Length: 314
Ligand SMILES: O=C(O)CCC(=O)C(=O)O
Image (cartoon, rainbow, N blue to C red; front, side, top):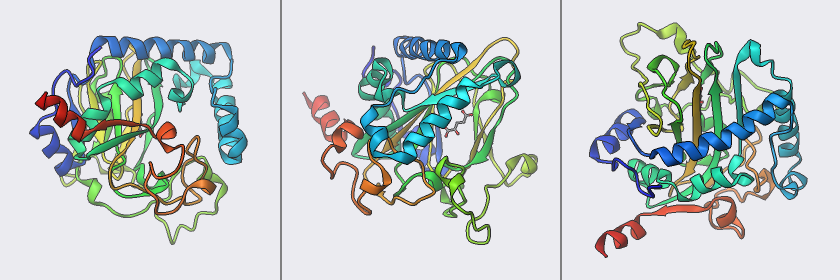
């Protein structure tokens, strides 16, 4: 298993991320990493199919964070009830907290380095992971949105690395709108927590539905044909949606991973997502992830530029 990106991150990827807010990173992961994750996902999928619970977060996390506890109960219930034949859309999140393979991937794979080099951070911490799986013929699209309004932070360095674990055609790929990382508007997120909070539509806009803007020459849609081990780095403010899977012969299996870079500080707003291990009530507004006791376990450092430089010099 390679610890560095199989194909090194170069200036072209760095420039694309700075210009578009999105960069397609080819051949980051070797087949062993992909197989490790597919096997781990296979076990979760078997639990979904059998109607078993799939979330196994530490009990202490749930006891300290009632909102997280409610979210997990609801997510487990949703998967138990999933009518696979009807939607073909399954997923799970936060797996690295209990599954050894997802944990190994988070901590030891080339992902941290790829993210750090492409976004230009000196230190990269892992935030969390999420599977997005659309079976052959699945017609569920992921609605157009940006992640930023749902992250309980300020700063720009909190991207997602969306990783193909199966061959994925352009039409089923996550789709992004180039340049939208410069849009600083704070749309109302559709997080689990936001559903319990009144949304003042005069104060906070809804996301743009880009389906209505196809054909508009000023809107640049970006998506790629992906091979297993390829990835797309997505700036947190970039507007994106997910293709359905019109391919009747193969499943679309993707892992989205979230990362924290140098300029991120906590800003626990009530509508934002939960963070397992660090409830909103315990986040110190303005503090840097890494500043509080326990942070290195909950947001582990996975890559440092200075370590990479000293290794290169050896
Ligand atoms: O894969 C998808 O359909 C959506 C992915 C996504 O929204 C994300 O990674 O934030």
